Image 1 (cartoon, rainbow, N blue to C red):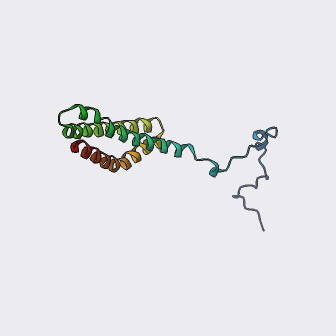
Image 2: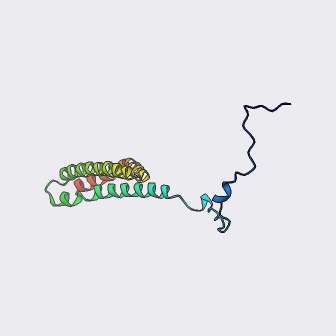
Image 3: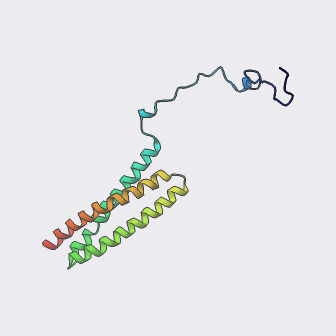
Length: 136
């Protein structure tokens, strides 16, 4: 068998430069198992969900004050409740964009998930409060 002149020569097992980058003084720290604790991203998504759900809670309860003080509590509660939900939607969009620009998209995703999940819950709660306001 003859040698092929177009073939690259065989390299030694370790390149000689690799020894300069190895540190034998420090021990290599073992990584903790991934299942030991939730990652930071999951925590940020959860915090966004809870922030949006608490915003829905405020949007349902804050309109109670002007509704109780007004002559027609049902109409005032519906108008202020719709305004509060629109403000909450605008805040979620603004915070989601701001978080994404700051490279924290997990919190923005959590805000959107929490807002979408909270809409039916807030609607049912607002209807229950409206029935309670108009019944008395």
